[in-house]
Length: 326
Image (cartoon, rainbow, N blue to C red; front, side, top):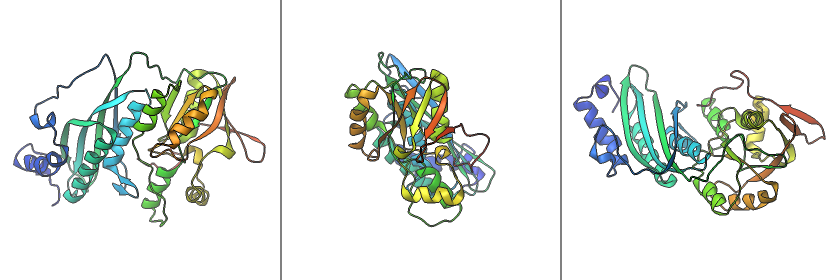
């Protein structure tokens, strides 16, 4: 079945769409009440984030816009040390969209939410004129302990910089799909809750965390260096990159430091705790290629110690730079 403008009218067609697709996969006691808002249990401190997902194509190797929207939302909460609890999903659907694809997306949201430990508590659907596109806006809510203080101004001289795995996977997967390039590269879109919770439970003093999404590692680290007024020095030899992604980026002239991911984090912590943190991450799903990639020093900006013994300044991504991946 194809989506028509009638599916956004608020009448029978809307009810049928909700019943046949969304209620089928998002059913839970909170959502099934079908009230104008959800009332849920709270906590002394909460983290709140919102995001919109406009990826093309909707389905790609390793994931789809449904999995992506849950991973992106819960990972933003996790980067502040929050425990993700609730998520909302608002769909903007262009007429002509295929309900089979919509159902695949809804099913993926349900499965990924279960993996991430969050509950879909409310949502919305709007249908607009167009040519079959689907866009999703989310809001995520997580609980934060009073003692948690993970912010970008916390970097200290001598801290270690740890990344949870290979860089550039999502970016390469999306571009491959758009350009019809056959390879084995899959998106890394994944919820990172296990590795974060296990580091915190082990007493790792995480000063700051960020998920490495649009703009890539270079942009993220420049933001942290500017916020804490420090220099971050990276070691090129220690940057984990899949060999196929490395070859793909070279062929297209892409800079791995500005390629996005959707299932990687960068964490900054005292150097003496970094090895322990890497061991913890490596034991978690999605963290097998974790590595210590650099350290915090006095100064400013981000520098790279190259394989040939030189130094390179890593800047933020300026302008479009690369084709948009979401």
